[in-house]
Length: 170
Image (cartoon, rainbow, N blue to C red; front, side, top):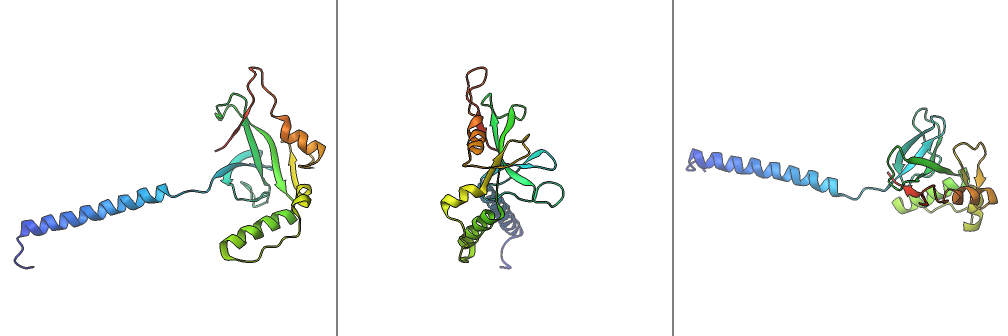
């Protein structure tokens, strides 16, 4: 190794440094290409503001400001089909009862570490524990009730130009 000329050692050092830099950028590129969990809109009831969270979050979740579980899923629509910030509006909000939320979270935990899930509600019973309301409403309604069906289907009316609103995602 002592017989290697200084110019060759410099070239070798430069090659190793460039290889390290290339490896770093490859790693950063790979990290950015990893699949990320889909995001959906949530609405902070106390703030009256939309925010984004993981689709797997089971509402109500902790909202934006005070550590309270006042973040509920928001179905956001756009009448013009563009989903621009100015054109978006909240069609309705969704949340689950504490019993159904606990059940959903236990199924997710089972997928993570194999913990046996807690299933206290059947699929048909769960509909009575899934609630919806419009932002301006004060009362939550079961999704399968006549009021709940009216809320979840009522936004699908064509607008002035005849275009049916579309659901927006973050």
